[in-house]
Amino acid sequence: MGFKDAVRTCIREKYFTLSGRATRSEYWWFILFQWSVLIALFLVMLLFFGLDDSLVGGPATGMETAGIVSLVVLGIVFLFFFIPAIAAQVRRFHDRNLSGWWVLAIIILSNVPFVGFVASIVGLVITVLRGTDGDNKYGPDPLRAENSAEIFA
Image 1 (cartoon, rainbow, N blue to C red):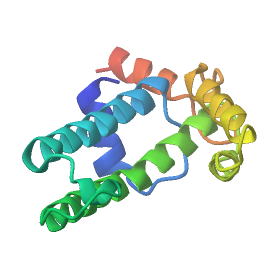
Image 2: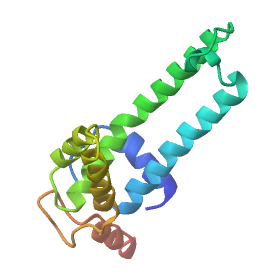
Image 3: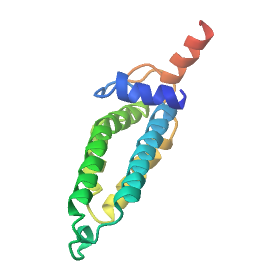
């Protein structure tokens, strides 16, 4: 699955879908797109509004509204990506034949000092590893489905 297909799948077709499996390419292309948009938006806002000292504890300069609006817009875009990112990660865990509840456990544990670091590394490793071969309890092998579609197309 390529970049365009992965983004379309995660945003249009499977925005709320927690069932099924996601290949590594689907997951990582979408994560690349998500962070590219967030970083680009942050840089555009930084370019137009600059760093407002009042947002980091300095004296008010009259630009507080622009800074707050920037943060609100960035927050809305982040929330837009939050649901499909979680859904894609759950499907990625399913590809490894793991329950999606592990994603919730990693999110909760990521707020605990040191334990959160280890949990985040474990989550990262799980998303990088190849999925289980063949069918598992979460559905058919998405790689096998892609290959058979190409053969018979």
